[in-house]
Length: 122
Image (cartoon, rainbow, N blue to C red):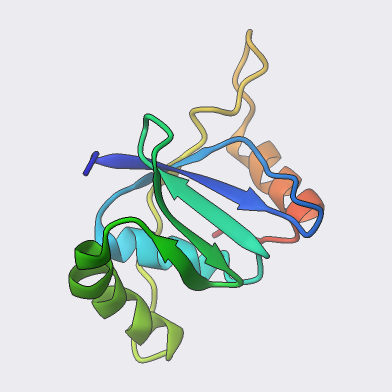
């Protein structure tokens, strides 16, 4: 698996924001799923846009690698969902958020996601 993945957050109308780049470490992926649990759907792909998994309201719906799901992701995700442990500090970047000439600030990205998708990223 790539060291980084792309995550797309969808709203109820099926619209999504530009990709957020997240680390592929299972605790980071699990933390992102928990942080976006109010999103109707998120899609996580590799950097070539091959599907890794998608979620519905914070629960994994489809995962293309069942061994990864069972042995790596779920052992990290389930304790976070049950509040047995806290999600890690998320490590993500806004690399796909630019208008062609200048980058958009992290604050602007978070504001957009909060306003358009009702998700408050840490």
